[in-house]
Image 1 (cartoon, one colour):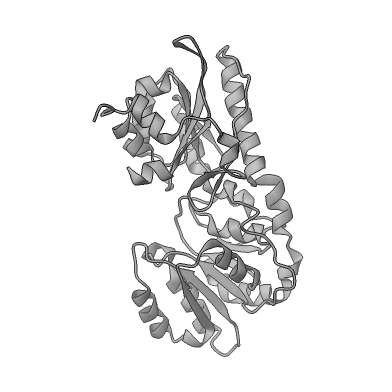
Image 2 (cartoon, rainbow, N blue to C red):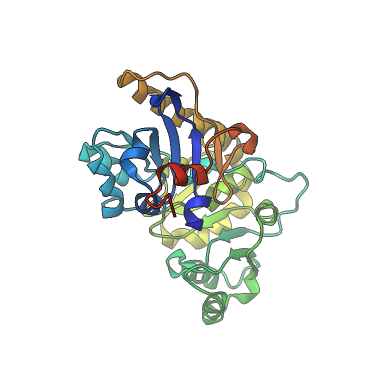
Length: 339
């Protein structure tokens, strides 16, 4: 329940005429599995257009595909991974994919360039201590660079793995003198370390709702992403923002960025393409088009949101003044609303 409350937002309230809905509202959620258990979906979908943002790639998922049963209700599904997008398109159901997701809502007031900040680190990696984040790939690259003075900031948190396991890996590869380790930093401190770094990297082979590489973009720090990664929109890694690489190239690319990080301008690109304002406009256009195709009125646009790290109104909660709260949603549509 706590996860549902913190990851669900009303982006537009429904408009009623008497007891009938004259214009559907818009409800955004990352916890669509919980939503199906907590509310009476037919009643909710009669009043709200649903926007789902899955937290992992691979959309042949029975929890997500359960929503196909509501075939008369178009449901927007964020699908930044191209194969997921194409899967939903080919499915031809009521699940309508869009090519944006968690990476597209970073708050540019939280992650931003800090003037005069010294570049203390040649690279930074922001990732939980989970095995799938593949810290060993970084340590193996640093082992090959052990005769250099390369410095890397490692920012992590306890999630499906522990710092002690990472420390064992560091000692196994003999790379401790190249690393500074930070744990569970608040967003402003993460932004400070990003600003002190020349390049930001992610080394997963499969991702879901990754935000860290794109938070770096807003701090004007380019990124390194593996070419065979599944989950990240590869179009976002371009001549303005960073490089797609083969894993074997990592040592030489880390050295290359020491001298070439200034060649990139990721914040300028990110503000234009993946800021909360830009992404809200994209989502609003999709929802408006659906309403027009169905002959429904569209008299009010959705409000903006950001992920920091969970969904929040942007720039603040005042944009949703008077909107139904999540408690209101649970009271009105909950399966156990009388409890």
